[in-house]
Image (cartoon, rainbow, N blue to C red; front, side, top):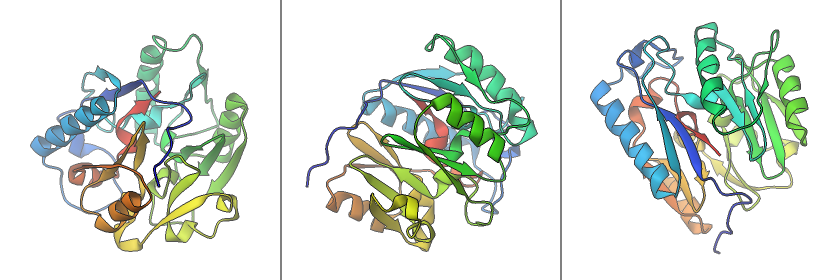
Length: 261
């Protein structure tokens, strides 16, 4: 099988360089303290990979006032025709969305915004072909999801993950990689919302790799997860492996590090 081109190709990405106090950000895991030299090295390779996939990068300066700010995906939801500024569920991150508003005005003529009492992290939003899956989590509430659905004006469905201790955001456990295919954690595989999709199931011991990213002709995948990598290859996808160990220590995944449009 040869996979088909995505419904819409990405041409741009926004990234933010990690701040020196990156290790002071929020995390729910106990995997050790990130090595900042490796953080910078892994981030630089990630940016190179986006460029290899054909994207032009807007690289933002580090923001020491917000240690989590390299995870730019949480600050906005972007489609080819619409940009929505989020309202992150962690109060310490609200300033990140404010800063992203200025950046996105360079690319979009108008911006929608999530407002109180809604909260929404971009990591909870998965665009799968013509549908959006909206995760309600400990960071995104029902009101935030409702506001986003109205702003997108596209088919959407809510998935409540608040009872799942294994993931922080929806996209920690599901990725849409084109060709009507979803990469999903085993515990998601029985969800009726996914009945019409081809599923690639990720076993518990490789759960971190469920956060993979289709970028034009490639699928970015965390290095070190051979079962998922082999399954993607067997189905005609083209994995591009990237070291992510230092970002994993801070609840970060591949999708978190860029806004792609």
